[in-house]
Image (cartoon, rainbow, N blue to C red; front, side, top):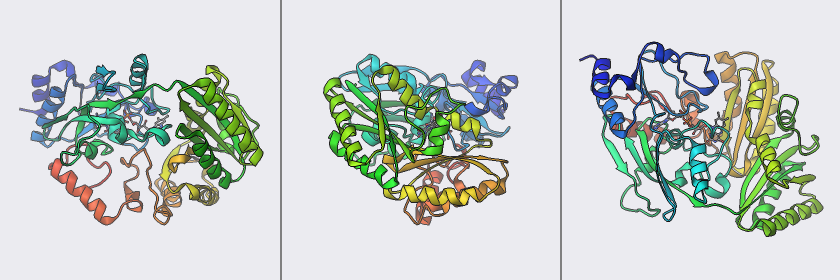
Length: 461
Ligand SMILES: Cc1cc2nc3c(=O)[nH]c(=O)nc-3n(C[C@H](O)[C@H](O)[C@H](O)COP(=O)(O)OP(=O)(O)OC[C@H]3O[C@@H](n4cnc5c(N)ncnc54)[C@H](O)[C@@H]3O)c2cc1C
């Protein structure tokens, strides 16, 4: 039986989108004007639907691309007319919040912001947070091992997942939805799927680890001159706050000027002539005591000359304002034509010089218009957004070579959090040895013998 007929027979026509229903869709939230290319889009409502779809696709050797919230930054949700999409948008149920185990069991299509709100309604917290929280789904977040703004305190997605259910390429369901933190009974298989970008299995459900909701939140923007002071102030705050430092976000001067400039809806909280700007945050248990500690640390950092200036958020309006400046990176990508994104990581002390050298090289290229730098510096993770005059393959390669070439020498990574997808495959060898890449291929061949699941992402077989 032809594959589409088999899918519609077994799943029902309402779950198999064809023709015009496909071209109304898109492959990324930033490219809604470009119609999606696909043979069919499957919209499962249960794990069983995903298993049925993959069994049929596996039987036919049919390539499949998984769609979550479509916010990835590495081209991984693009497809061709011959591929079938599995979209997790209707796997969107929060199945349980267990306040005593401090867990939430969710289907893959639940959006991050809904998870945050549901945890909050139970006086708990799901700490993952980043700019795409209104669209990114937990399945995509798990598949990319997303990081974000509070990794410093809580870790990446990997640290927030207690249980996982995935469907393998041949339709086998691997379900381990335990609520326990410790489980050393053999290999920790869930970790294989976290960060594998949908190449090894489709995530259908997960048990998330929640924390007690912090009772205090203090944030400040500070101005700093000299990269060595960026590092010194980080150590100073971490030591002084005794474990409550939860964010330390660095923005370079020209990027901060744009983030708070005329095309932005936010105004600057500080003068615009410092070399670096840091947004720092602590999450604690007593607002008035923690605010006093936070304020006095900043005052003594100013006296010691670690920072040049600082402004503390006084109320919830200030908090929203301060964080919007950092989170709304659309202000940057809207200015940067043919925007080119990087999320490298390297040892914290080396970042200042690395970025300075890379910028000097990039500025020599006449087709490079803007270079924006910001990032999760306490995680060793820095972003570049580069605006260009065109999108030619030659220019893209030239820019990539500058940013990635010295990564191996500093023992860094070409991707701290966005993943490899289709866009960074050619640069994986800067981060991973030949033996590691060979092992990745062996794992992929073992779990997906026909190479049907998200083929060509991360590695080519
Ligand atoms: C404004 C903005 C800010 C961002 N900030 C950050 C940040 O700070 N930190 C960060 O880490 N990322 C960030 N990102 C990148 C992006 O949000 C993350 O990669 C996110 O985790 C992707 O989730 P998604 O649901 O949109 O996945 P998608 O983009 O739909 O998919 C991503 C990958 O996962 C696969 N996939 C999706 N769902 C599943 C599933 N159920 N099972 C298996 N595979 C699946 C897809 O095939 C694809 O390979 C940002 C993106 C934007 C647009």
